[in-house]
Image 1 (cartoon, one colour):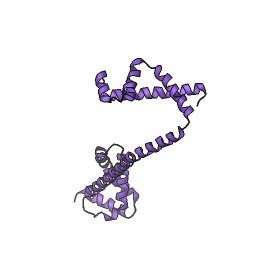
Image 2 (tube, helix red, strand yellow):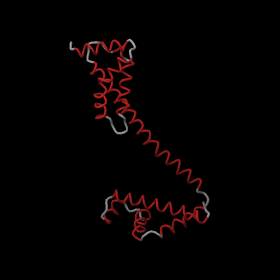
Image 3 (cartoon, helix red, strand yellow):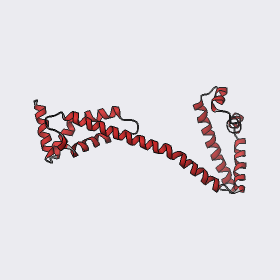
Image 4 (cartoon, helix red, strand yellow):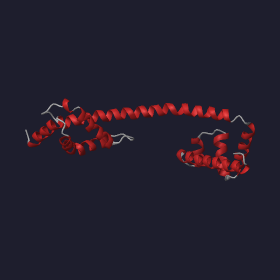
Amino acid sequence: MTVERLELDSLLKRARSGDLRAFGEIVLHYERRVRGWLAVRCPPGADADDLAQAVFLEAFRHLERFELGSDFGAWLFTIARYQLLAEMTRLRRHADYHSRYLPHALAEELARRAESDSNDEENESRLRALGECVAKLPSADQRLLRERYASNIPLAEIAGRMRRSVGALKKHLFVLRQKLHDCVIRELAARGAL
């Protein structure tokens, strides 16, 4: 056995008996390697530092399971692997929940708006304001809005005719919708209809 191996075994025995400083020395010895290993493998949304901390906490909790004389680094990296797998599962579940929740929340919001939009006079006022706001736009933007929303022409077709990418067109439409929304709010506020 090497001196380092004997020293590690000594630190592990002391840590098992409750010596936190001994475990702290073990952490210092392996911390960079564990963090580095996790950092290269962490998916977006996972924090390698938090995972490394969880690895060392888990190792400390189960230190009595480690068989002295065997490879502590391998044992520690096995814990790191399982912590990473658990985090990836958690992130997948979180993403899955949100992908199923969003359509449900959107449907509820649309239903709520449909119920609250029962006031015909308010709707007419909003439509008039929207018409006035659209009329203030440059003619090219008005044509784009008509093609997309009145004629239901696919974005790819419009983008091809305009010699722009679909992504650029989506962004432009988003900006136009935001401008129209802000304009309608200003118009309604000016009329005292808000």
